[in-house]
Length: 308
Image 1 (cartoon, one colour):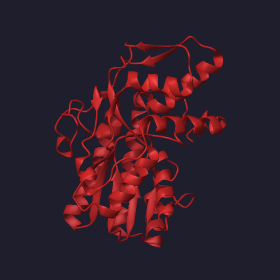
Image 2 (tube, rainbow, N blue to C red):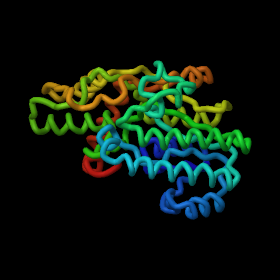
Image 3 (cartoon, helix red, strand yellow):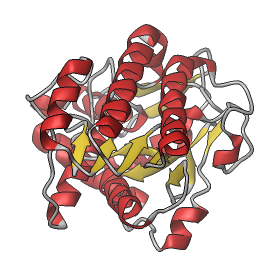
Image 4 (tube, rainbow, N blue to C red):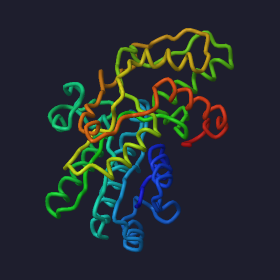
């Protein structure tokens, strides 16, 4: 088994879950550059893994999506192109490509189902990243159709947990709010400002649950994909912020800045297909936030810098 993306939140958790289940896992760390086709080709031809999970690629929150659209589309297109093709060329039998819930149209019917992909306009704040992830999904479908390989896309809910990126520039909403409220608590600040109205809703999944879902899907799923990886409940950003405030112990007020963009109004996944196969999350939302904050406290020197 080869997992691309050992340095990402989801990739690292998936490697841990696979090794715990007794799998011999390659992570390729230090052996190749995923953005160089010759490097990817040499690694995969040498090891010839039968199963591949692609959890690699740059990812940012809404701020990074707006600042670095070229970096995001370039990086993710290169990784999808090289890994999917070279995995096929080296004889991989199964491949799961992890995309993103922002691949769905901005106003897709909720909860979102795979048949809604490519049926409407994307959320402008994440369009470049979403287009690259859609390309990866379509590559899997194309290689499956032309070559008969079991390649499929999977679309996870918004992951969070220990090992997340807490940096001011690149963090997603859970890690970003957690860090800011922690710093506000230490500084005795009276308020924390939050982008948007707070009414936008997201489905979150604790990263260990998502890793479990990835392993389960590789073992049990036999459909064409894409497959939604979720199963929790959607939560408004205001509800999330108040839950993080409680976990962190910040005593001040939360102030929502409606001059900043909300992003998609609602992102919730229909994970009925995954649930019907027998998988459901095991970590509650509040418990996941608590575990994440405890990890942040014990690793905050590293978490305060670049990607953890």
